[in-house]
Image 1 (tube, rainbow, N blue to C red):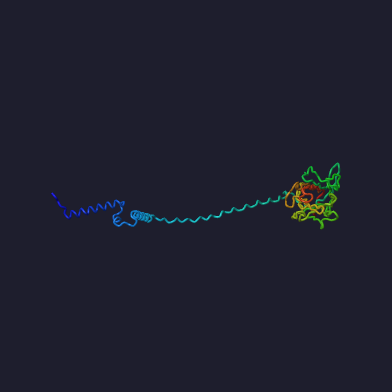
Image 2: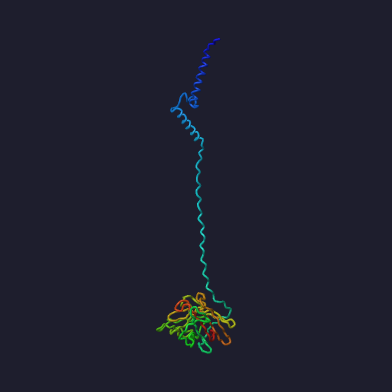
Length: 304
């Protein structure tokens, strides 16, 4: 039977055919939306892809969270290093004090017995021996004084001065001027009479200010402990040829350089007889490092 298509059937067929054409066109554009095929953008498919890429980038940019830049913490200020206190220099050692004595102070004058020398008995009375540098008290070598007044030139014999000897508890200063004559001989004469030493007179004195070191010194002091004597005679100064040599012990600064030895001695209270000995190394001057060894003998006369 021959059926003729109705108008409604023809209308449906045309719609299906049109839909198929659209599907084919969509497939040829790579799956672009229908409205793009109907109204293609300038540049064709390439333009469409570029436009899509821009939209994706914009979306990514919009969805990316912007993290604020981290603020750098300010650098911590370094605390200044604590300065270590400067080391204080070690204090200078105190000058040694004279040896302590528990004896009775002897205030008066130790009268000097004149020195003498005999070949048989050796020296007696009061004298001085000068020990050369690097020598020893016991064995020298000793300085030979051709004007010593003794056959053994190493003993310079001493005679008493106007005061008769060495006074304790008071000073016996040198006169002013202290030297005189062509060779500048020493003029002090209270403790001992000036004695020639290599042709120029030398002598000794005591004063409140040492003439060599210009340091203040106490007057001589001697103590008796059951017949044994000790003490200090820092004020004793020898004068020779316009030079001063401290010949005390200890030295004005309390030191005992070289062969310097403290005062020792003996005393017989019944007779007044005494002996005093000490050694004093010279510091500076023409006899630097020489040592004077002093031996005084006689009788002690207390002050009235």
